[in-house]
Length: 134
Image (cartoon, rainbow, N blue to C red):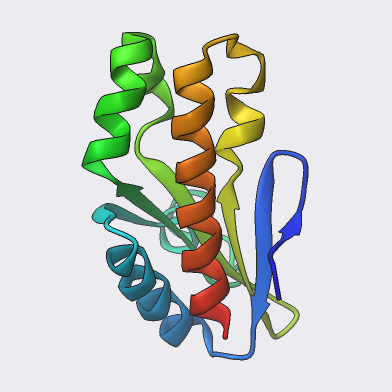
């Protein structure tokens, strides 16, 4: 099943527990030639800073070097969108996996080469989250 479109991103749900889903996402990103550059445990940071208790929420920053290089060759300012983010979170016992929709992100660029890079990036991210949720 293809990920659902949010307008700004693509999303799927997983029957896996949160921690398992995080590991599956990282494995599938690697399978699509992404390198996992960082992980931000948002729950930990917000719970500590705000003295709250929230459900698990992880941001995974991933980069496909070839596609990143091609995007930066179109516009060096595009680094503000790197790395690509994939979010894994739990809400009411359901694990969600969401990523940015790069086609939507760069829709108005007017750069045909960037549109091709964005489409390839979107396809790889969509496959990764879909496979992680399977």
